[in-house]
Length: 193
Image (cartoon, rainbow, N blue to C red):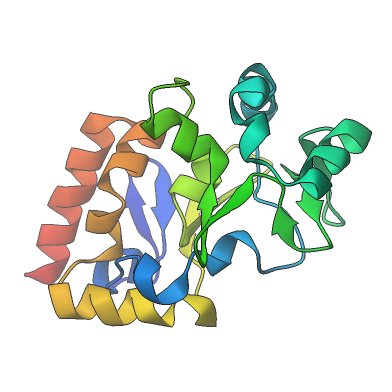
């Protein structure tokens, strides 16, 4: 029987992170997660500082509308739930989105991949479809955020046999460390047995 909550070194996980398949399919979805929704991506104060430090390196990739929003309100704002999130254009598009053909890409990640910066992108973006929640007592919980725009990622993940925790190995290591990820891997193997 699969437990309702899995504890890996004090981080609580919904079991579907270990059991469900996922692998982004950018050819199919075109990066729509960067331009759909009603708020920007969750960010920390430290990440806002990192983004502000690299803004000149990504500025030319941003639309005029995104540049205007950043000039007016900055790279982030507090949403209706009281969370810090990246600024958005037109009530939905992340300001850091740019288009290459018909595909939406992240200007922050593009700058990193092309060696212009050392900051990749907010960890909330890198961890998607996992969403992190921190409780008042400091406990961290990770949940699988199911979203219909990611249906092609679920299909591709099933085809390739890649579970969410496997697909997100590098972001999970970035967030929680290599030792934590090794414990997650051991937990997943036990669960599958």
